Amino acid sequence: MKFMHLADLHIGKNVNSYELIEDQSYILDEILNISDSNNVNVIVISGDIYDKKQPSEKAVSLFDNFLTKCSTKGKTVIAISGNHDSDERLNFGSRIFSNNNLYITGLYSGEVPFVELEDEYGPIYFHMLPFIKASLVKSYYPEEFETDSNSYQKAISVALNHPGIDAKARNVLLAHQFVAGSTDPLLSDSEDATTDVGTVEKIGTNVFDDFDYVALGHIHIPQQVGRESIRYSGSPLCYSASEITREKSVPIIEIKEKGDVSIELVPLKPLRKMRKIKGELDNLISAARALDPNDRSDEFGKNGPLNDYIFATLTDEDEKPNSFDKLKDIYPNLMALSFENSRTKALAKAEVTDISIDKSFEELMSDFYKQILGNEIDDEDLACLKKVAKEAGIINETD
Ligand SMILES: [Mn+2]
Image (cartoon, rainbow, N blue to C red; front, side, top):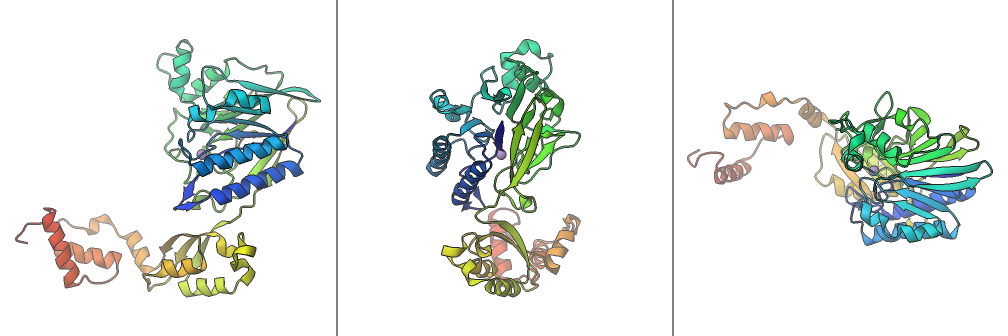
């Protein structure tokens, strides 16, 4: 049995106010092409299908198109909800869809449902555990928890015992949780709230011992957790600058006899790359102009380098106020711009202790201007700030 593991699609997500729906549509088509060329007819999706609990019309229609294409091609889709999805909404129609080889479990209601598929080696079970909080499992099986146990480890093991699995058979689990091996998984900036996960929420890999493969969602950087066959597929696209250096991929898993599991990671090529550039403004612009003109035209270059999502760092000492617009003229998908020069370095080193309570308002404003803007405050700005500070009651009328 061959299947493909996806998670964290976050359909409808915006990054730095750019709508990524076109990129998401492109990558889902790529994923379908990869599944065709690798003869994969089963696709599992481990949660965070949508970015929001109330997804936009565009997002819903994109996922609908994807499912329709899967169905037309005769593929089986097995999906669960993640913490970004609305469990009830994702559950919509699921009983009818199952007649069309589309199995969605959005809602946990005391049992972990499974789909039984068949190949030449016999049955294989795909167990669907949607995103759950420990308290939800406890509400169904309070007697199975120690009185003060709220741990997710406990909750997952209790949940997996209902209805329980045949450990001798081939079993795959879909889950959307924070699973840690001997070390925590690598995090990016786009997962939300996972950076401050406490030990209570962490789930050790030993609860998954009886599963041949665990298809995880929640963490956006592709990686294994503990053994190779417990894995976060990662999101199919970069959703923050912190993911730029990590290649996105889609795992294709083949399970032959029980215990015979092989995993291939197929790299994903996005419509537009997300990347960083660094240098002086004029140099960056002239380097971009020197690129192949075909890369600049929409017709030829949607995935040309000038259409990439750019995070720029300018090293100019002279910070021109219209730098962003100038760079955006040549890189239309400029996501963010920052400076790295002697001013920002001094600022990074500046300590809060430099700000003394004994200093007058004028002195503080003058220091602030020097630190932030690198120049002296002029009389007009100072008068204006004093007026505002008086109105706000920060300084007295007489000052
Ligand atoms: Mn996610």
